[in-house]
Image (cartoon, rainbow, N blue to C red):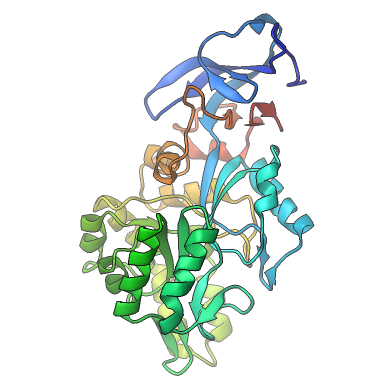
Length: 370
């Protein structure tokens, strides 16, 4: 089936029929993509348009993904392209790239690849993160590096909030409170939001009270910090498909860091309870896979299923990768005049999120891709 049919005025026209899920409870019978943009008004020459049918969602969001990065550091353009294509085939058409040392701006010129919101490069404490990933600096330089990445990114900055401290033999906070406050204030002055990698408990209160906007993983949430997150409106991206690797990580480091290994197992064992408690408290929860690094791309459906397993209602888990996630990131969904980025399924994903694992059609910028 071609999506290159032209209307009477030479426009590229695609008709999408079935059940168009404009929002959780707003369903329409069809939409049109005219030269890559959505309209709900029948365009001239519509009788000759290509047609796709099914249950329609806005292109899915992976709010924690790393294009241009593998377990060893930055990758070449061909590898980054393969990563982006894998995400696209899974229905992920909007990515918040939560830290990458690679320059992936060339992807913006490709209409066949997902749209990316970049957080620049990770900012980590010296020798306190994965080698070749981050700017590794000391606290006195934090404000300057945050300002640099705020200017380079697309409205986000990524800190490494905690990591294993080899002297302590466990996860500890990476930054003093004063430097974090100044750095977050500088990012906000420059119009950027700040997120931070955090596995453990220790760094969370200082980061939230310093004004951070989001926490990645958030496995260290407790009864004491959950109300603080809810009060401040700080979002979390749990990356449960990544947290599933904690037991293997713990086993690999047990001989050298037994305290850290035990801590990682505890965080893993309570992961579902943590996410459900956060959701119940009103903390915004969004879908992210942590693809890149050591984790495969294309896992967005698995992450939604994990949120449901944690006890988040299916419709809310779906919104965390669709309507709600796009709204949080400031990008449109299936709105009049928006880019026609959407995924078509054979059945209603609201009834069973497992449908997300098998897209019938991928439509990107009004073109049927797969």
